[in-house]
Image 1 (cartoon, rainbow over the protein chains, first blue to last red):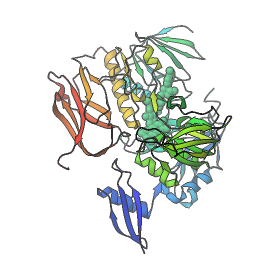
Image 2 (image 1 turned 135 degrees about the vertical axis):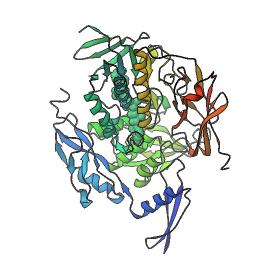
Image 3 (image 1 turned 60 degrees about the vertical axis):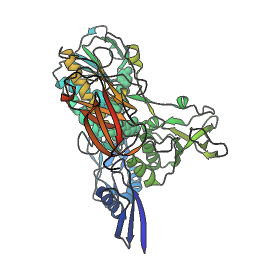
Image 4 (image 1 turned 120 degrees about the vertical axis):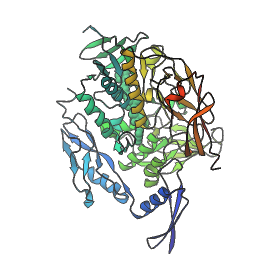
Length: 127
Length: 422
Ligand SMILES: Cc1cc2nc3c(=O)[nH]c(=O)nc-3n(C[C@H](O)[C@H](O)[C@H](O)COP(=O)(O)OP(=O)(O)OC[C@H]3O[C@@H](n4cnc5c(N)ncnc54)[C@H](O)[C@@H]3O)c2cc1C
């Protein structure tokens, strides 16, 4: 069955609404985009949309109670909530290094979750 | 402790603006650069902006806020810049004397060769947008909510209504949702969204959070804690339309209704502020109306891209070094004026007239297929095409140095329809 999907291109302020028509997962036609970037965007958003996930995890003994973390690269969009959920149960011990792996290969995606800032221990930090 | 310290330059505020200005001043040869920050760490607003979207121009790479800040913090730590944390600047005088206070040194007085203002901005509050109702707990600005969740590890509420569709509101709609709260919707008084399309798609659409354009909150219910808000549609004059009211139950109202440059210190120093930007009037070195006082970043005008903040910081830091070194010369005074479909331009005037200048401006209304033109005494000196310009996105243009070499009276920046395409 031929189906239509709509995507708003995020690559420039024009924000084209791009329509993608497919049948059984095969892209038949893309229209509404003003340039080639829009077509590529819509096809990627249809086939394999990905997002870089950012959240925080708890830290014991740090200058702050949480440290920001991110997936080292984008993961499939459908896993975003699940990634945040599994990270909610993680607790680290200060100090945390910038780039430290907080969870390797999250949900079997092959992507590591890393700390995006250093977090010193409370003693050395705030004083 | 009481000593009068005479460093080359004092930079007030250590967000991306202050970090960039201090580094640039140091790299331009100044020996004693003092960076003063009231918070316990460097980075300004960036440590709480944990999402990605920073640095695509400066680093050609998309970083999270903390990652962007860290690149500058590491350089500052190695640079010999004197950093004063937990230190608040209380006063700046027109002669550039700086009075600061902290719990280690008590009151610190400094008489620097130059000052760079980099205090950023603060959030517009409910008071400034006048929503009637009681004063219950649960009304919070988006940036404050962001700080509670991302820095303090606290959750400000569980059923949330967001007023305003600026980027911070959109980012927080996603953040609340990921932390398990329910975001009922985002309400925007204008008939177009305030934030970037990227954020509309990735923060709202990805999570099926509705955006209600031409809507506002007309009443806040609840005495101790927010219990509900009344929302209503607005007409073309942004007035609520009777009969369109709807009661929305919630425990938290998040306000994302704009930012105001933080200029209490600047005012006392006699720095002239611009009526549209709310920040200091600056020239092409980012020097304000008071000699030797420079300004950069969000204290000058709310820049949506941190990259532009960094660029203005580099200009201000180098400008301060030129001033302290006695090399800064004014050759005239030329106003930079907003022309067709331009709301304001930074800088607002040129005085050195000896170099290429980058201009930053916002349009008044969305427009398709345009040319952005810079005119020097009526003659176009630079132009570029844009397929679309929108008020939430600052635009950059430049004036080549040669265009300023003769006798110049005025510079105008304008956005005009692109005839060739039309
Ligand atoms: C929620 C949010 C999301 C954003 N998202 C993005 C994004 O995705 N991409 C992007 O490019 N940009 C984004 N930005 C914009 C970018 O973060 C800002 O433009 C930038 O941080 C402004 O830098 P600044 O140094 O001018 O101000 P700030 O970062 O606000 O720093 C000002 C500093 O001055 C200090 N200060 C103020 N007064 C005093 C005083 N009297 N004494 C001592 N210290 C003082 C403050 O404590 C603060 O540390 C976002 C901004 C916000 C708020």
